[in-house]
Length: 548
Image (cartoon, rainbow, N blue to C red):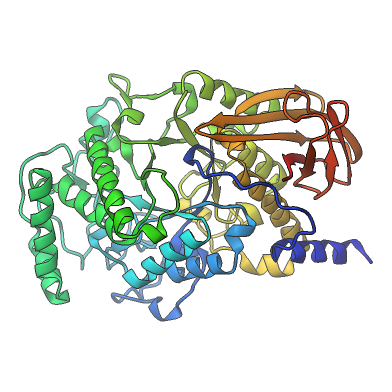
C-alpha cells in the first residue's frame, strides 16, 4: 500500500474520531487553557443559501469585500459534523452578527460591504445575512452539547460608515472627528478611528433620546413596544443614565440573557474609556447568572462570563498595562479576563525554548493570575507568522502548545491562503474557508491531522495552557506542564523536534514509576521504567499523557 493511501486512511480514521486506544482522563475547562477557534462568520461555511442577499446588497464588491454567504447555520453545521471536536476546540469566537449597514462604501479599496460585522446599524437585531435568532439559539445549544463555548464580538466604539442609503446617527450619539493621532490617551479615545466611521460618545453620561430612524425601524418590524419596555426596565434596574454607551451595553447583554453566549471579545478597546468595559462586564455577569438560573440543564460549568480585550499593540512584555504615552491602563482591572497578545506572532519566529520559556516566565511574574490570547494569524493583522503557509506544522506546535489561550484563525489548520492575488489590505486575510482542499489534497489532510492531534491533546489538558512549565531537556526539546489548583490535577510531557524511530524520554518528577502513559500523537501506550519512557514512532512529536 503506497504512502498516499496510508495517509488518506489515517486521515479518515482520525477525522471520524475512531481510536483503538484507551481514552485519557477528561479534565475540566478553564479559560486560561482554552483552545479557541476564530471564524469570520461570512467566510466559514454557507449553511443557508436563502439568506445570501438582503437589503439590496447586489452591487459588485471588490475582491473579498462583499458577502460570500457564510452564516450561523454554517458554523452549526460544522459543529454537528464534529469538525471542531476533532480539533479539540472548546471555544468558538464569531465576528459580530448584529445588523450591518445596508449599503456599501468605497474608501479607496473598492466597494466594501459590512460582511465582517464591524459596521453596526442596529445592535438589537441580527443581520439576516448571518441568520435569525432561532439560528443563534441552535448554535449555542449545539455548541454546548459538544462542550464548546460561544464567544461573540462586541463593538461599542463606533457605528457603521455613513452611506447614501443608511441613516446617520445623531450628533449627541457620535462624533465624526478628529481622526485619532495616537499621541496620547485623549487622541486615542476621543476621536474617530478612520474617516467616515462615526465614533460613539462613550465618555458621555448625558442622557440622549433614541435615534428617530431606529424607532421607526422598530415600529415597522413590530418590535417598538418590546424594545422600549425592555430599555425602561434596564435603566430602572441599573440606575444608569440613558447615555449612548448604556443603550449599547443593554443591547449586547441581551445576547447573553436570551441565548446564553459564554463570552465577548471586545473590539477596539483602547479607543473607549475603560469604565465602559467594566460596566459591560458587570451587566454580562448579571445576564449570564440570570440565563444559568433559567436554563440549568444547559449550563456547562461554573466558569463566569468571559471577556477578552482587543487593545491593538498590547503585548505580554508590557505586563498588565497598556501605555498610551501619557497614561497607563490595566484593562484586567476593567472587566477583562484576558488580553489579545499582539506580540506572539513575532515571538513565534524564535525557538521552542525561548517561546515557551518566555510565556511561562510572564505567567509566573508580571501576568500572574491572568492570561492572554495568542495568535499567529487574524482577520486584521497584515503580518501573520506564516503568511505563505510554509510552516503549518511548526505553527501548530508553537500556537497550540504555548502557555496561554490559543486562537486558531479559521484555515490555520488547513493552510488557507493569506496572500491572495487581486485582493488588497485585510481582504487578503479573509478568503473563504478552503473546504475543497480538505477533501482533495493529501498535503492539506496531513496538515489538518497534525492540528487535530495537537488540538485534541490541548483540549484534554488544562496543564498545557495554564500549568507550570519545566524544561526536561533542551536538545532535543522536552518540557513538562503541570497544573494542581481548584481540585484539578493534570500533567503532560511534550517532546518536539525529536528523532524519528525509537526515542527515550525522561519523565522523572512528572509521572511515577510504572505509570501507564499514552503518546497522544502516535497513539502508542507505554509505562514509566527507571524514570523514562520509550516511544518508537515515525514522528518527531511526542505528547505524553496518563491513561486511566
